[in-house]
Length: 130
Image (cartoon, rainbow, N blue to C red):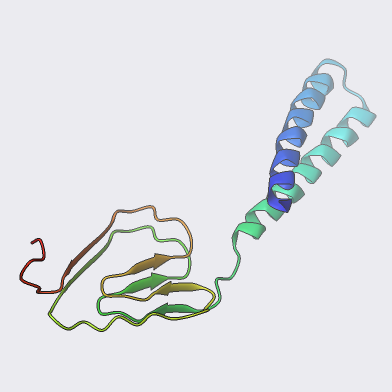
């Protein structure tokens, strides 16, 4: 909620900066220059708060399945898992905070996935699709 308010405030302050810049250009005065400086500084602070709020900690990061991948932050590259076998244990963690990838070929990403993510899990059962 706070991030939304700060993001909205950043937009309002950017608009105020534009208006005050137009006024400074048309009618230069010390008061307008001070107002512009204050608006720019306030906008920078609110934008920094939004950016800092994005970098939260994810707590525990764990990948417990065969071929599982867990990323605590954002992933910028391709993630591909390929797992095959007929007896792959699947650990199912209970009540854990953070980023967890608990099964065979599972992928858990705590932030943005900017690249492709694909999994291929073949458990070796006769009726499993290839």
